[in-house]
Image (cartoon, rainbow, N blue to C red):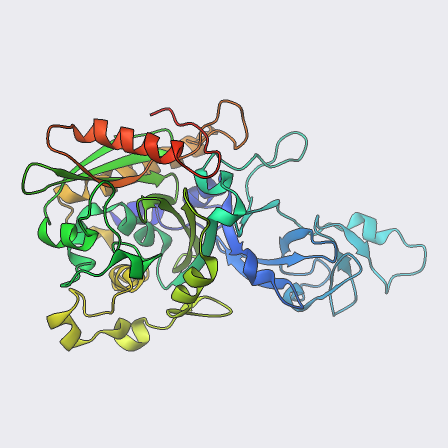
Length: 444
């Protein structure tokens, strides 16, 4: 790639081509627990914009620009009272829609406040994640419905949300999730573990229809066949590892355009993970874990992840500052990376060590990178569509009668004599039919 091409697909601030595309989609901006406590207000930065997210006394969510329209003071230090956020500088009060309710220093009877409007953005809260809309509104001033996704259709009891900070550009963070080959190396463990003792941990469960540990599959079959197919949501990635004895390990994952992936965590749980720019050199990942069987054990999953991340900003305990926890002895005996057993750390090293914005003019992509190539072509084409005033690729809205959810994921073993495609389609249908909540039908 040329430097200009690299900027075209990485820089997402206001008035950039990529930024205009990303603003055509709902963006995760926080998880619900960030607004717990006695003062439910948080300063956030998304796509290079400084914002304030808050919940008023009636529980309504508001997302507004951070600088007070009076003289630019910081509303992140505002008082939550009287139906909104009050600026400490002169007492101007703004509600969740950005309307100015009071300008108390103005003369009595003044209608000045009625002419003041702080820019506000639509917000939606579902499954423990809060989404913001930064794009165009319809003729009635409304944002579109959220997209049809399993994680957004599932009951709250069956979804767990979490986030984490990455000290790098959003695109390299996303691309690691569409690279099936890396898991055999970056996430290689030299010993297998009991799946029951590793609830909520990726690549520690058994594959569907098998007692074969995923760790063994990845370790011993490190040259998979990878197929990439365009889909309604972006890309479907099918990865086959041909096992001894004629069986085939089948893993189906998805790129959810423009900036998420959907992958299996276990035989009954999926992960939908977005990568949202804070600015051009940092991002947050937002993950929604969706169970099709029993309710999610949220306290356990939260406890597991807080071993790596610190509150209130979900910063990783390891990173550039301490070489990602690298340990020479561990690399020789326990893990391929020597960076602990949490795959989030492995991925964090892989994407952060590329630099804050990867220099793609120096990379050499191989056959195993075909999903990354296909995604970049799609990304460039969709950016150009927006530049022409056209509508980019999007899922149908959640709740429409003809809108399925999904997308389909699977991690299982197809028996010899069964085609991988027939196997995974049947396995997905079984999973959804046996779910403990009403799962929208998929057109496979």
